[in-house]
Length: 106
Image (tube, rainbow, N blue to C red; front, side, top):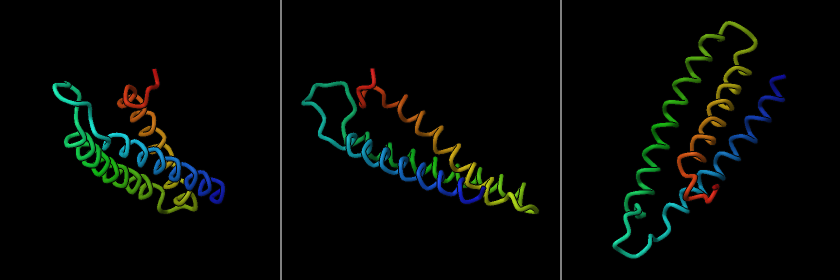
């Protein structure tokens, strides 16, 4: 069971990294010429980086706490990976919603 969830964690992590890398690249593209009210790369990419750093730290803290809960049993590695998968997938959905217009999902 640990092998299966570890494999799912690897896939989810790779998908997360690919999505966030592409999204950050999109946010760093030059903006439209002034006087556009849209955010420019000077604000979008650094703000995204700051949000991602905060999310990474929060997720690590959450999953570490969950692992402590299960530290006396054989399920500790499974629960740690499951937490990372759950948090990453939720973040992917959140980013897709927040950046819906940038991603042309409508």
